[in-house]
Every structure is written in C-alpha cells, then in structure tokens.
Image (cartoon, rainbow, N blue to C red):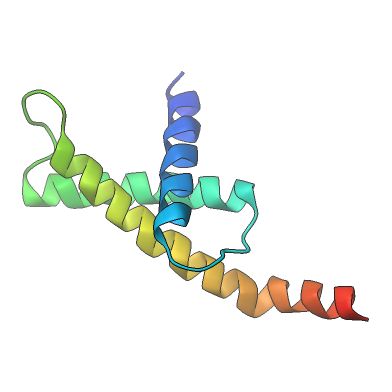
Length: 95
C-alpha cells in the first residue's frame, strides 16, 4: 500500500509544481508524477536533515520542503525533456 500512496503523493505534488511554474510545461503526466515522487523523497530527506521531519499535528514544514523540491525537479526535468525529446517531436510535427 505504500507504493500506492507514493504514486498519489507524487501525482499531486507534480501537478501542483506544474501549476506553480510559469509558462507551459511539455513533459508528459507520467514523467510529472515521477518528478513529484522524487520531490517527496528529496523533501523528506531535507526535512530530516533540518530536524523537522516529525512534528506534532500536520508536518507543514516537511510538506513545504517536498513542494519546493518537486517544483525544482519538475522545472529541471521539463527543461531537459524539451532539450532532448521535445525538439524531436516538434520537428516531426512540423515536417
């Protein structure tokens, strides 16, 4: 059941990250979900390193670290996606 929650959280974080980043992102939904999952993992590691991984009630600081990490990862992966696969698809569509 843990993997299902990882996918759900990754999906939600990825979508929020896409909504926050200005402009249009061209990466597919499956890649956005994976980036969101990576953002959750990196955010948890940073929260643990800072010492705020487990607090009373809702762990807002941990969630903020997760979201910021997801935003950075989604932005970087989308730029990389457009630099490699995205240009090939645009060229094929134009030809």
